[in-house]
Image 1 (cartoon, rainbow, N blue to C red):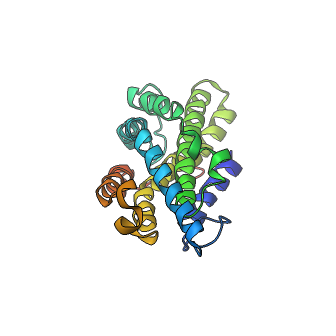
Image 2 (image 1 turned 30 degrees about the horizontal axis):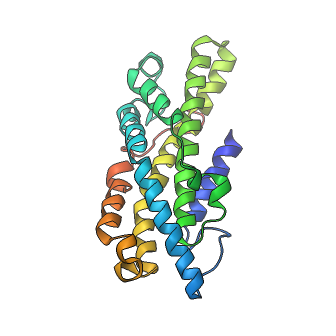
Length: 225
């Protein structure tokens, strides 16, 4: 699971790097046809993000409710976490996240321009959140029921999963910035016309923002703690 988290977090870092596209994703909109395609992909991605708003809002709210229990690592007595309705609700909300096909790995390979970058961030969020909560839940069970040596090993690795949950919401919080930048890069209101207004983009950028989605406090769990 360390490798899984590292790969996903690496994808987030790659997508946040400088450049108009994600890693390995096409070139600039150097022709009218390429520009048209990138605009169409961004409009389709916006509509997918709008459909995702409700389930993502539920997951974010649930995780924020549980975050104070785990932000600084597992407590000595883990019952407050393992039996917490907040943690159970967060794990369930993350497990129930289903991305629209457009944002899934198979179709996302065909997205061009800013849409490809935004899609990668959303997939990283969904993967890290669901896996982080699933593995943390398994860790809590092992600490409670496994032999002492196994329980110590499980506790020592819990920060990996806690940090994955934090990284998931960090990735999600970057979507709005990338959306605003991509919209302006591809021509803004003049380029998109009635297909995608500045008001729509601004509203969605507020939904997928640091103010809405970042977890506080910053993750304080440390590997081996």
